[in-house]
Length: 258
Image (tube, rainbow, N blue to C red; front, side, top):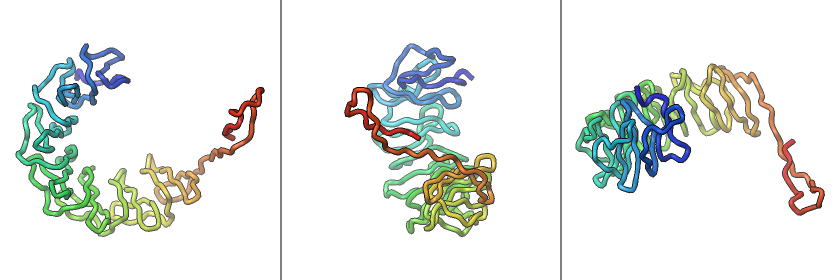
């Protein structure tokens, strides 16, 4: 594919491949190419889409335009937010206050009343529930926040994956999800069960069975999927010392890393 190995120039005005510009044109801003080789760009006329030669594809201008996911792209114009197909045409008649990108065949949206939910490619709701926030689906599961402020996981039909709710929550990654309760951050399994008793100020997703966490004292640790501490990272302290240069200048007061 012609857009493979392309990237955005440092100044954000055009695309490069193997270090060379793909085209002679320059834009105010460009975004990455997405399958089948279409990129959103912006100039003084507005937001639109180009091919790998820098040619305007649809002859349309938008207020906002984003990349194609699952052959649909999120755009906004004076009528609101919606999605277009690979021909640049709207795929449904509905308009929203905001839309995300399609993932796993569904897309999170915010309607004119401020409610979040997921829609099908037809623009119709995937289920009846409404939330104060809804994230993208990953492997058929998404995170939503109820009006109580509690977060939980839902399947594509809107039903709960498990009965446990949390103050904050992330999607599942390799069988585990980051979750926060009133005591701090932890990890849960697919059944919504906390997998260890400790709580942390910060946790990262597991990476090949290990996760970086930060304890209540600000120390970074590495834990395994059972919550066992397997490594403690070295901490670097910064202290202020009065150090003057040869001329005893006022700039002599510096911070030295020890």
